[in-house]
Image 1 (cartoon, rainbow, N blue to C red):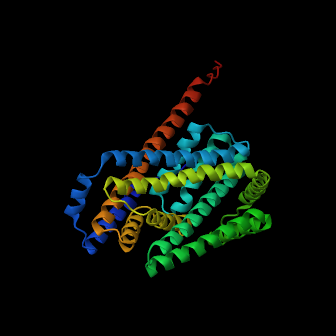
Image 2: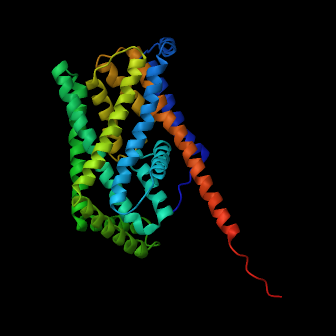
Image 3: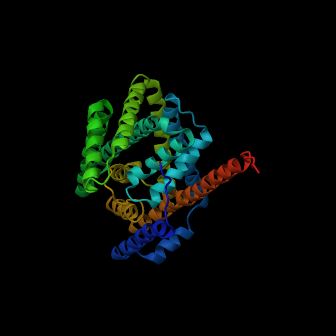
Length: 360
């Protein structure tokens, strides 16, 4: 597998466009920018620092859930290495469009690079299982949040319809993923169709015969690994519990941001807003739903659900400083450090090789 290479301008263009779109949206809503600055200055730093701590806990529990799945398939990552891989993938998620799959590809690349391509099928199985667990938790959270809102107040029809649509779309996607996991022939047929499409687009110049053989081997390993999960419900339960702790940490971050502003928000608002954002990101639409669109979505949902516009905008900004920009800079540092370490290790190996004797 080839390493992920990204030029500087490509890394910067999407975040910049997203920030510009969000600022323009605030102006369209006629949100008082000086009021936002004033609210930020009065925020409680203790609650905000606690929210930042939950960001790191979120990533830790997320990495542990994935590590449990990998360990069952005899791919043994250390706690630290799994944690680093997930931070690396979060960085890729932010800077590469189609967020829903880019981070997972980066984790597949990292594990395959360090442990060999022989484990690729197992890694794919762990990533699919991890995604299914995460989607199921988000799906149930959206249903719970919607039910809580309906019991508390008269819900806005737009939020209700969007929630129903995402619940239905997520359920369909979960079923399709489960069918691909169960039906090996479906997976092989899908691989064959993709390769034929590539061959057609290249007008026959590229014959993916070797890749087809490798893909079939990977698919066989993938389905064998999925069957292993089916025989080990305790592993799935462990991953489910850890993923639930990760999800709670993610929700707690948003809740604590509101508390730092002195505004007590209902948990139903947190559940619905964050579940909607998570559901959109989990559906592979191929759009860069990471910078700009989530902020606009959060402000809109908060405002529609009764949160004052100034508090909605301020909490969104402070929330995204933690869930986007903190992740971005930590992930960037991890990615740079990890790649530099790989280069230095490779150079050291080359230098330590015995020099061949010269014959005169």
